[in-house]
Length: 66
Image (cartoon, rainbow, N blue to C red; front, side):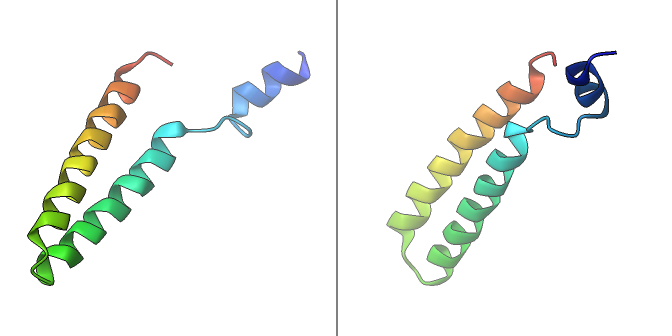
């Protein structure tokens, strides 16, 4: 067994791009919620739109076969 095969087998060094994107998505939602609470509806709308776009990218990425 080669080293690369054993690393891939255990997933030690495999990066998960959707994990990073989900973290960014949660940050955007949090910022949008704070903007809404402060009455800044323009910023809320902008951040919500960005988060929806990012969520679409996450779903597309996760539907791809590994």
